[in-house]
Image (cartoon, rainbow, N blue to C red; front, side, top):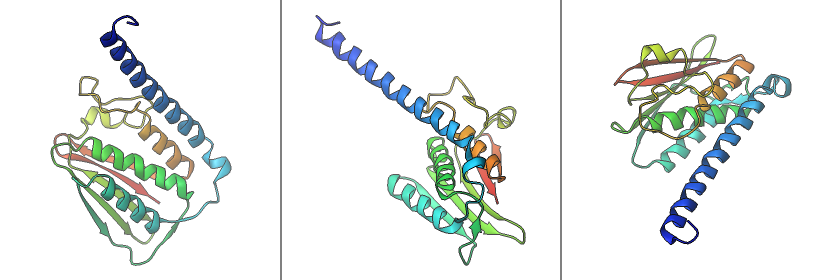
Length: 190
């Protein structure tokens, strides 16, 4: 295409797009490798959960002004949880990113923060396309995509795997419930 400007422009655009995709994939692979080392480096870390949850919530409100974000906060005080602050932030960003990505028709995301006698719970709920039941068990698998025929949404299928690895290393329960065409909720239980 070096002699044809139109072909050259298309080739450069395709190469740039592929470079960006590979850069993203490499970053996610590095994140996954770091997540596998969490229990060695950060096993004693403690973070005030409410502060981090509010920060990520407010950031996404600013980033996506065309979405409705609701925050149901039942904590009356900040509560320390056993996780490194950056890891909690990374998990929440992954969950919020997915909620926004898969909520194209009903642009609404709910966040909940609550506490009972034994635990603190953080929930991120979307009202998007949902996950078929046969796929729910695999959403934390590396490179897993729910439906290969759906429109490509970006990413390499590593976000939830990274979140799962971090939560396992910190001994936090990460669960998912989903109804097709109704939406999905991910819950962190500390």
